[in-house]
Length: 380
Length: 252
Image (cartoon, rainbow over all chains, first blue to last red; front, side, top):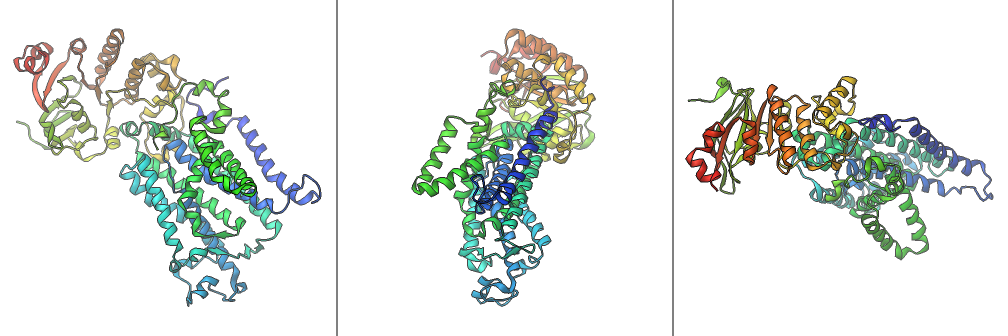
C-alpha cells in the first residue's frame, strides 16, 4: 500500500528500513572482525590486517560524502571545500595523537612535538593547550569545523551567495587553509603535517585490535550520521530544503528563513565531515596540508554524483566504490586513474544523472519520481 | 491629506514610493491605499510598475524613498521577505512557482500557518487537524486526486490553483495575486474568477491583471498604473471611460 501523501516521515522509518539498516550494520560490524580475528590467516576468506584500516578509511570517506550529499543533494549547496572541514577534524585528532607521543618522540621532549623542537620553539602555543585530554580534543573535532562553517555560512547565506559563486568561494576557503597550513610558523607541522603516532586512549595505534576498534568506531559514526541525515531529510525541514533547492525565493515568500535553514544543515554537515576526518587520521597514520587541496574536495563531489545525489545511500555507495576502484587502479595502472575518474564523472553526469542508486531505485520509485524534473542543484 | 504614523486605518498604505533601476523610475511617487476587506484590481501597460509595487510590498525590493505600511504600524520597507510573509501578506507570482519536486500535498503542508523556525520544522509533526486542513484546501482548489503527485506534473492552470491554494491555506490577511489567469484557458479563467471572488469574502486581495474581461468579471475597484504612479482609480466603467486611460492603455 502506498504511504499517505505527506508521510515521508512514516515511510522513512518503516520496518523494512530498520531491517535493512540493521542487516547492513551487522555485516559491517561483525563480518570484518570475524574474518580478520577468528578466521585463520591462511584461509582464503581471511581478511589481512592491512585491509582493516583501509576499510575504515573508506567508511570515513563515506561519512564525508554523506555530509556533502545532505547539503548538495537536498539543499542545492554544492560545497567544493568540504575537505577543509574533514581536514580540520583530522588536525584536531592529529594534535591529540601528537600529545600522546610524549617523551617517545625523536627529541624526547615531554611537552613539545618533534616538529616544534626542530623549529627551536620553547613552549607550546596556546592553541595546543588542552589537546592532551581526549575529551577536549574530541570537542574541538566538532567545534572547530562547526564554527568555521557557521561563520562562513552566515556570511555567504546572509548575502545570498548561491550556486557557482558559493562553490567557488568554498574552493577558495579550502585553498587558503591549505596555504596557511603549509606554513611552518602556523604551528601545525607545516608541509610534513603530523605523523608517527603512538597511541590513542592508551591503545597502541599499530595493534590490529586498536585498528579494529577504530574501524568499528567508523561504522558507528557512519551509521549514526546516516540516521541523523535521514531524520533531517524526512522531516518537514527536509521538505523546506528541497523546496529552497528548487525555488529559493518562493520559500522566503512563504515565510521561512532560507538563511537559517541553510546555515543549520551546512554547519551540521561540516561537523559530520570533521568527525569523519578525526576518525580517518589514526587509521591512515598521518595528517598533512594536502588534505585541504581543492582537488580532494572536488573528488568528494564526484563520489556523491557517481553514487546518486540526493539519496544519502548513494553517497556512501559512491564513496566506497570510487575509492575501492582508486586503490585497485592506482596499484594496477596508476597513470590511468585521473582519466578514469574524469570519465566516470562525465559519464554519470551525461548518462545516469541520478547515479548508481538512482539507476537501481528507478523501477521502485516510479510512482513518486516518474517524470519529476531533475533536482535544480544542476545550477552549480 | 494623509500623513505618516499609525493614524491610517488602511490595511496597506503606500505613500510617495519611488524605486529606480539605473535611472529608470519603476515607481514614481506612487501612493496607494487598500482598505481591509477590499478586492482591488490593478491594471496598467507593461512597465507601469505593477510587479515592482508587489516587490516593494513583499520586501523583495527596497524603495528608494516613500513609506509602506501594513495595518498602519508595520513598516514594510524595513522587513525582509520572510518577516513580511509572517505578518500575513501572501504573494502569487506571475509565473506559477510551486515546488516541483514535492507532492501537491507537501506544497500545501509547507504553506500551512505554522511555525517557520528551522528548529521547529525539524521536529514538526503533521497532526490530524493540519491534515484535515490540507485535505479541505485540496478539495477547494480541485486537486484532491492529485494530492500525492509531484507538483511538477500538474498542468499550467493546476499549478496556478495550487499556488492560490498555498496562499489560501495560510489564512493570510492580504493576498497579492500577480496575473493569476496568465496562460489559462477561458474555462480555467472563469473558474479562477469564481475562486477569487469566493476568497475575497474573508480577506483582502489585490489582483494585478492584463486581461480586461477577467478584471470586469471581478467587478472590483480598479487602479490604473502608468509610468510608476496612479493614473486613475474607480469602477471598471469609470476607468474604461477615463480619457487618459484610453490614451495610454486601453486605446492601444
